Every structure is written in structure tokens, then in C-alpha cells.
Image (cartoon, rainbow over all chains, first blue to last red; front, side, top):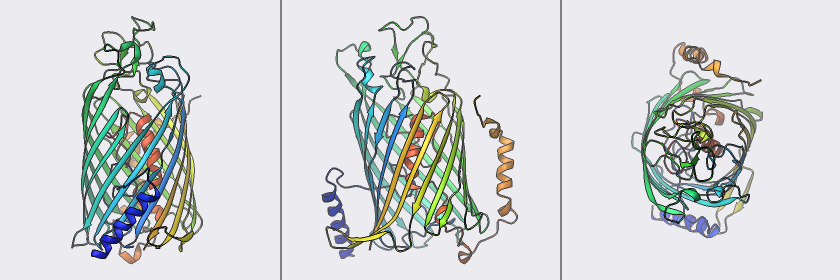
Length: 423
Length: 81
């Protein structure tokens, strides 16, 4: 045991030295959750058994995101939405013993936004840029019954005007035959935002005008069920209660009575309480040895008046047993928030107001293609610089998606996931 | 001409489609033994989004008023919706 703790320490030190900008890290237990969200899986309903490999897993992920549109919330619902975002992330998953794992996740979002720059200068052209850092730590333990997993985690993130701290606790239990699983996770976020108003709305002459807080409480429940040797599904819900600053003070709103004269805009104002009720159904079907079907549907409702439906379909095609191509498509439609109106459509008598098109009535299509290469003996092997251990480059996952909203917003995202394991 | 799929989102239609899709299993909701799970254990059969998908679910959470129940951000931790 003492040896394994020492090995973990050596590994962590190695990664920290290799990547000084990223320092130490932790991640959340579930593989699909990278940034501060997570519930563990006990391995039922077709997933891998907890701790079955006993290997240290390292994932290096990155994405490049680019968007453009002409409904910037900073300028009251008009103006460029041009934005780029680069997000390198490292996830470590380290077994301490046969039942306990620690996970670490550290990442950076480096973004450049043309609209953010217009907080200070309405029609400037250079882009503002900023960096967001996030760090999440997690610990999961499989109990003696081999069917129950409990987890605890915490995380922080920081950017120039927003800081966040979160705590997560999770519980998951599989049925004796492994055909059903119930997972429950609760998470609380405690955020602090620096108030930044548009240049013409500042009363103290400074860019920053104090701080405000936001608390978010999430309850995530997932029930998974095997239906046959080829079919399984999962119901999920993620109830959210948010309290505090929910508007963005540097978003302008122009009113029809006062027009678009410089200085007549107000800062966006939204209620300080929000409840979200999303419900999802995920289904996977092993149609043939060549093609599988992955489907997901979500219904969403909240007290801002947004009602949304989302449908996703993915059909992995096994070109060879180790090389998979997976085309995917997503459709999303939503109604507008009660407090949304386009540029110059709000009235000064409105209690709450926003011209943020994220809260508008629109539909969106996403289309893309991914490929995964994961040979059974790995893509390659190499010795690590510290500890002289042999690491395996296990799998490579690449993915491209193109997204288009009926508001005119378009976006492209390229993502990569490189998986490594160490004994 | 705007292409829309909103006709798909009638509750009865969705429920019917889900039941039809699940029909294979609902014929008994049989207990599948561990040795019969060769298909279910396939990488592409996991009942969760892929790790690499998280960037997409995150940007969708930023760009859409709706989010959650899919492993992405749903509130807190960022200045998003």
C-alpha cells in the first residue's frame, strides 16, 4: 500500500513537471464529464467494471471552437458574435487499490471574443481575450458488495471576472445481475462574479463595480436498464436551482421608447432565481456487428419560460474491429425566455429584460463525424520521463462538428482525445 | 425554406417511438447474464456521452438556454446560462 501511494506521488510529480502550466489536477468519475460534473458508474448496463484494469489512465483532450453570428448580447442583440476558444485538458484516473480511485482534471480555456471587447468601445474591432483555469478533484470507492460506488469531489475555476468553487457527492448501485443501475449525484456551486458594466453605464468611473454571487444546486439522477442482449436505455434528470446573479451586467438592452442613442441602453436584468427541469432518455442498440445506434432525447423546461426539445442520433460504423467512424446529428428547438426581446423591442416598463439570443426562440442543427482508433495492444508504447515506466498510447478519438442556429449563428468545433495507460 | 423537425416533438409521438424502439427488450425485459453481454459491453454501447463530446455539450450549454441531463454544464461554474 505504501508503495502504491509512493507511485501515485511520483506520477503526479511527473505530470506536474511535464506540464508546469497545468500543475496538479483531478477529474470527475464519469468518463463523459470533464469539467466539474460527475456521478460514478458501478459498471452495470454494459459499462466497464469499476477498477477492472488497475491501471493509471491519462487522457489528454483538446478542442478548438470557432463561432460567428450577428446578435451579440453585449451590443443589445446586434453586432458580431465572433469567438474562438482553445481548451486543453488533462484527466488522470489513478487506482489507489482495487476499490479506490482518485481522479484529477485540470484544464484551460483560452478564448478570444470580438463582442466582449465592445463592453468598453461599442464599435471597436480588436478582440478581447481571456483565460479560464479549472481544477477538479475526485475520489471514488467501490464498497464491499461490489455493486455500490460512492464518490466525493471538489473543484475550482477562475477567470478574470468569475470565480467558482464546487462540491460533489455521488452514489451508485447496480442490481445483482448487473442489468439495472441507479446513480444519484448532488453538486453545489458557489460562484462570485465581478460586476462589469458597459462603458457608458458606469457610475464610479471604473471598469469593475463590486461583486455579486450565484449559488447553483444540481441533483442528477440516472436509471439505466438492460432490455435485451442488444438494447439498453437510461432515464436521467438533472434538477437545478440557481440563486443570485443570473444576468450578465455587461449585456446591453436597447428599448423602443428611447431608441439606440448612445447612453440609452440599460444593463440586462433577469430574475435572481431560476429552476431547470431537464429529463433525458438515452438508448443504445447493437444493430449489427457493423453498425450500432446511439440515440438521445431531452425535454427541458424552466421558470424563465424556456421549453426545449433535443434529439441526437449517432451511428458508429466499425470499419475494422479497431477503427470506428461515427457520423452524428443533433436537432434542438427551444422557445424564447419570457424576458427576451430582440434589439429595440423591449419596453422601458418591462420588469426584466435581455436581448441575449441564447435565450431566444430558435432551432439548431449539428452535424459531424468522429473517428476512433483503438487497437487491442495500443497504438504505441514509450517510456515515461519520470519513473521509467512503460506507458501505452491506447486510443485516439477525433471529432468534428458543425453547428447552425436559425438565428444565423454558426459554429465549428474540432476535438481530440488521446488515451494513455500506465501499469 | 426553413427545415424544422418540431413535428417530432409531440409527446404521444415521442412516447410511441420510444416504446417501439424499446419493443425488442420490452417483450420480457429479460435478465441478461454476464456471459451474454458481449454486445452490451461494446465501447459504443455505453449509456453516456463520450468523453470527447463534453466540449460540444458545454458550448451548447453556453449557446442555448436549455441544458442538462446529458453530462454537460447545467448551471454554475461559469458565466453561462
